[in-house]
Image (cartoon, rainbow, N blue to C red):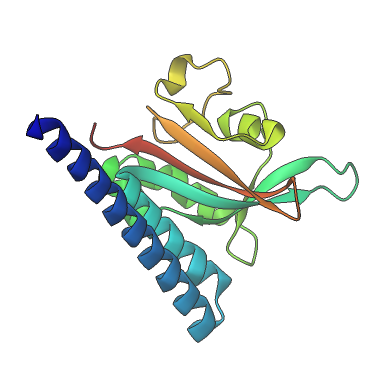
Length: 177
């Protein structure tokens, strides 16, 4: 039966195409970092590529930090989908992110402290997380008032030197099925 071979070949071709697209995204981010010595520019480039590849509306890249007095873990966000992207998804979102912008540190980052959340679960367990129904997921800690509604979420931790979690990439609300 040639139809099963054709389906298998299309799947392999699609997988190969996605790998090439991911390599292109990584290459662009490296180029951004090397040419401009801008970590935030490289993160923005990576996030834009990941949002495109995953067909997601929202996303962020964050670095695990520890509070100096308690050593408690939190996530410092270095890149997130742009205000324009988020406002295009839901115009009322612009006010939420304008408020977030005001709370940012001087280095254009902001912090997430609530580890009783999907991203917190991902950080604590050191495992990727997929939620296709965020509002009823028991691992979800809800969302702040005014935050865009999350329908789906994927979080992937990344590591340094063995099993120490260095950061997290999160994307949400895939636009197609």
